[in-house]
Image (cartoon, rainbow, N blue to C red; front, side):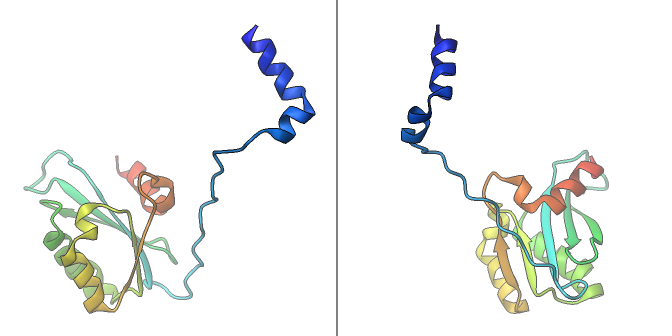
Length: 146
């Protein structure tokens, strides 16, 4: 009986017109494609993984323009460790990015990381919480790593 009522309501035009839509979803925003290599990067952290020489996490960085991936082993997820890894591996080779996109992990929202991006003159973009698809470039790379 419940199924029949559901079907009847779906077919009733006046029922559909008066239906209140409470769960409207806003479509995800889009990023414009940068015009040069290594100016817009996406970062994230994978782990904990099985230890290898004391490193149990991976800091993953992907360039938005060229899709160049980097996986940097790090011993912990502290903001200090992440800033040092970005500086020593990415910035020393490719220069400072103009834009950094990341999820809202606590270490990437910390005052140290905010100050680090401010000193570099880098704009920080945070993706939606609990929506891995909003930082899909890095999340897809994580699938290949695992």
